[in-house]
Image 1 (cartoon, rainbow, N blue to C red):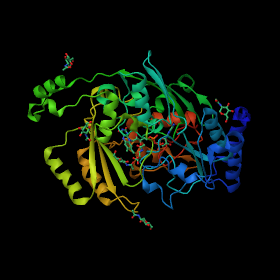
Image 2 (spheres, rainbow, N blue to C red):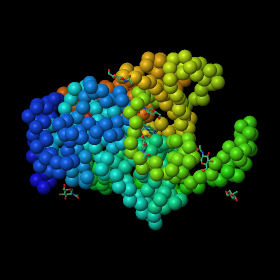
Image 3 (cartoon, rainbow, N blue to C red):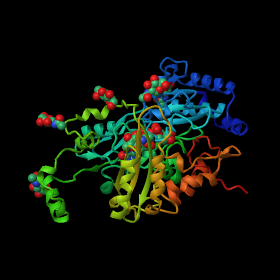
Image 4 (cartoon, rainbow, N blue to C red):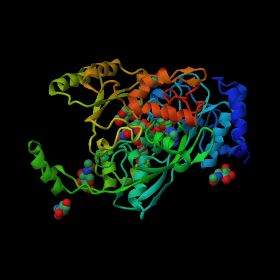
Length: 466
Ligand SMILES: Cc1cc2nc3c(=O)[nH]c(=O)nc-3n(C[C@H](O)[C@H](O)[C@H](O)COP(=O)(O)OP(=O)(O)OC[C@H]3O[C@@H](n4cnc5c(N)ncnc54)[C@H](O)[C@@H]3O)c2cc1C
Ligand SMILES: *[C@@H]1O[C@H](CO)[C@@H](O)[C@H](O)[C@H]1NC(C)=O
Ligand SMILES: *[C@@H]1O[C@H](CO)[C@@H](O)[C@H](O)[C@H]1NC(C)=O
Ligand SMILES: *[C@@H]1O[C@H](CO)[C@@H](O)[C@H](O)[C@H]1NC(C)=O
Ligand SMILES: *[C@@H]1O[C@H](CO)[C@@H](O)[C@H](O)[C@H]1NC(C)=O
Ligand SMILES: *[C@@H]1O[C@H](CO)[C@@H](O)[C@H](O)[C@H]1NC(C)=O
Ligand SMILES: *[C@@H]1O[C@H](CO)[C@@H](O)[C@H](O)[C@H]1NC(C)=O
């Protein structure tokens, strides 16, 4: 394919073209033509294709980002192999059209398929790249980014009962975005985050090259394991390491609970034994009779509007403060608050080991969730009021937030001279990544100095210029 010789040409063209922020219509047409020369036409959907809307909506979680005014892509590419992904990036570079990559579409701000401001961009949707290949003997697997967590759990447990992988709770989440941001779940205190168990990965970089861990180099392999999706390239597959799972039986648990927490009065009837695979279904559905095959259902529903925000707690919140927190939910509106305990293996890993910095000294994180129905796309005010109220009680300088619980309220990028500004990026970046933000920005400067992979909260390139 002609594209493999395109790198030198590409850089020359880019030097001239990358500073135009909105490509001309001609460039869009040339981009589509470039795609059609390199990717089978049935894998490319433009707004005039009959199935454009159904492909676009297939993994949208939040109706807020599927309205008549939502800024939609110029086209959606649904690659079936790595060559197609490389072609999409190379065509995008040549004709100055950015791509946004989507795996499971669960981004809280929808940044994998919509833009906050008018912009011409294409979506590379990885839903077809979803193989899970388990090596029982080595207790490892390769999982493609477009697989859902449910598909990962199901395939692993069916291939090798006794093996498990630590990741999030909702089975329709995509592996690609989830691992890019860390990945916390029910087994994190025992086994850490998803990224603490990733051994290798393959990625298409901003020049269209296909790289593995060795070719990526230390900084880039570090950055993609928690530095947030959409900044460094398109991760196609991840080698995930499993732990043999034994969390214990009911008799052991009841004995432990009665000696450590006798006030809870736990008995055998409060406990249910099940396989790890069944537990992933039970935790999500709350119904022990749901079959494990529901993990393979990728369909999401579009009826509830939500707005979420996050915090980290390092000093226990007192009972008196909790009494002031609960009325926010009774009086103001529908919502929940979710606490996820840290410590254990999560806390024993150094803050700089992966981009996820909220480890030592963190007791738990908080997720605030507001729900509403109807056509309103604006979040109710109370959730921001609660967030302000919480400020003195949670982590400070900077106040922490989790990149997988993306929140554009904490800051958005500005583009200065054609690239995202590091100084404005620091405002949100240090909340997500603390002291690791600078290393992420320097890594971005090394692998994508032109800032091709860009969105409202992508890591800005930090390049030292003399
Ligand atoms: C119902 C629900 C439950 C959740 N539960 C949990 C939980 O238990 N634990 C937890 O940690 N998180 C949880 N999350 C958050 C979730 O981990 C993040 O939203 C995650 O980023 C989603 O990944 P995705 O592939 O589905 O999203 P997408 O929207 O496809 O992607 C998210 C971001 O990553 C980028 N990206 C996607 N694929 C790639 C790729 N292959 N290479 C590079 N960048 C990529 C996108 O461009 C976008 O910026 C939950 C979210 C929802 C909606
Ligand atoms: C990807 O598919 C195309 C056909 O669309 C084929 O020409 C190409 O060789 C495939 N690449 C790989 C790596 O399988
Ligand atoms: C907020 O979190 C809830 C609970 O995890 C989830 O159902 C919802 O989809 C999230 N909101 C967004 C915008 O994704
Ligand atoms: C529970 O597990 C322990 C090992 O941790 C074992 O000694 C005990 O026999 C088990 N009890 C039951 C009822 O299976
Ligand atoms: C689950 O199934 C069992 C029998 O198979 C039944 O007794 C029980 O009521 C069911 N539980 C629920 C919540 O449906
Ligand atoms: C898959 O999930 C959707 C949304 O929750 C639901 O409407 C549908 O019935 C499910 N399909 C199957 C086969 O269970
Ligand atoms: C949203 O608005 C449309 C048209 O304005 C209306 O038909 C529809 O019923 C509304 N939906 C809800 C859930 O309010």
